[in-house]
Image 1 (cartoon, rainbow, N blue to C red):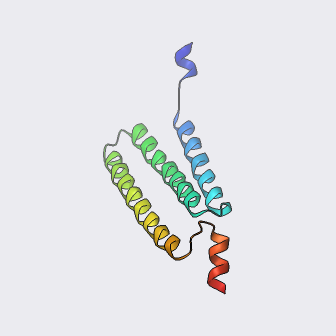
Image 2 (image 1 turned 45 degrees about the horizontal axis):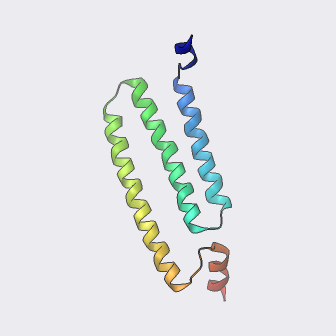
Length: 107
């Protein structure tokens, strides 16, 4: 009985990945803080990674696991570059709010 309740199919993983992706997309559009935007973009990357992992699990393909490893490394590099850009912007205008940055640049 317990094994039947924990039987996860490909659709469960795909639904979770879709939910993570859309939560990240919604957050990246709505949030005005740059750090929170980066976190939302990482949610989107996690959803995409979960798709690759789910398909490699159900297709018994080990090449997809390698691709996910490289994709995770690229996501970490993307986050490091984005944080450095944010650091340079913050030194010039000390506010993490994107609305405030737009107002200062339009003046």
